[in-house]
Image (cartoon, rainbow, N blue to C red; front, side):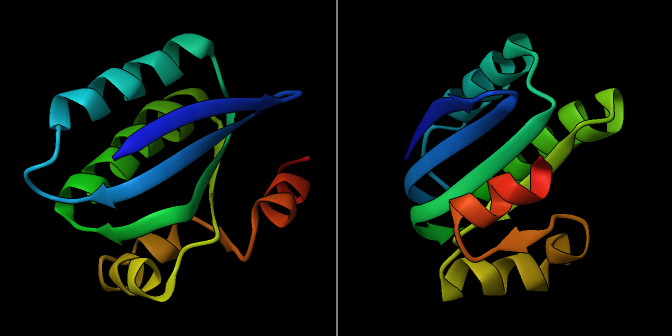
Length: 113
């Protein structure tokens, strides 16, 4: 799994790649969450176009971002381009009811402007 940041004005796009699965580096994800908090981003798009799979490790990452950015600082957090498998996991966990999903990054960015 890889997490890169891209900044579009006041919006931070998290470019996610790989499998966000148990057994992967949870410490890496905690570090990336802390980096994101230090950047002061309040509008975040998580780009899932490069993610093939997500399980509890990835869900934990999303929840950590949600709680630290949205609830604690009043930010906005949306998901872009999840594949069918990722979308199903988000629906099963009911995260789709609190994290808006968009078909692609441009539509997600537009929604945050």
